[in-house]
Image 1 (cartoon, one colour):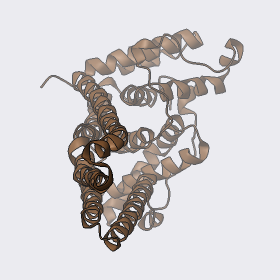
Image 2 (cartoon, rainbow over the protein chains, first blue to last red):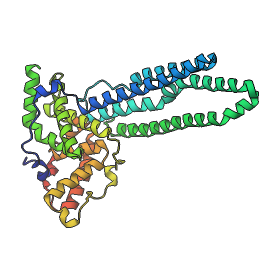
Image 3 (cartoon, helix red, strand yellow):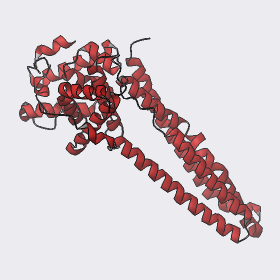
Image 4 (tube, each protein chain N blue to C red):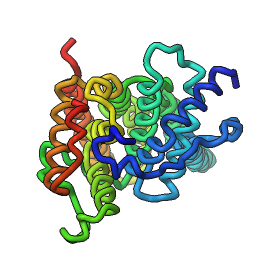
Length: 194
Length: 175
């Protein structure tokens, strides 16, 4: 410890030891536990959403509203596509903690940047056909009694709220992606020039 | 488990166990989580030794794995305040009065507070320097240029000098 620049620092934890490797066969790291919980949460959320949509579809079908039933089925398809995309986009990078710290951090940031900057394509996009179809089906059902103009007018505000929510999610993700791009660029500036 | 993996693990334990415990404590304030982080590092080190082919020094390998596991842990902490770059910090942070701050225990506490305030890459450089690694070794472990490493070491030395009046001068040899 005598060659440490700040000896008080090196005086801490003098008797520390490593855990017995036999524990590691069954041990999950905090990271692995967190990923398992996240995946579980996503699948449960997807399952609950799909069950709800299926119930809506069944109710609509029972009432003879086949366009509405098809719209809810389209929502189920959208949910499944998002879950599949999440598996791909949200999956972890190949595990190699032995690379240098800057490269490791950069790879994590680049991975997050890719997911955030393409959120419109893999997360929001798959829901759009189903949502559009649900709105059109609602307008069509209402229009039978009120006419198309009034029906469209009645659903304009809810449609606007949903569109605003999508635009908000898109914008927040793009902003976060921009901040990550700046961090990546700063990290690149710290490396030896190639 | 193969014999080489086990040998490397034991060798790493004899050389780096205290440094890894200090790293975990510096990165994670909660003692229970710090202990968990420390064991995660042990686990990842043991797993990684299956891939170790001697292309770098054992110390480089151990510190890279340890710091990257700690960085992943910190990166996932949802409530971590926004980091402050080292060039924007004038003095070593403190939660205590100036008199108390001179006490040895508080010195460590203040350094740990600084580590938790800094962006990850800055914190890694500071911690490696505190463990007695040279500027060249830190550059190899961190992937930063030697110049970027030296700038950070210079900053921490000034902060320690300001905070504790007479810091150990041996650190100068490590640049």
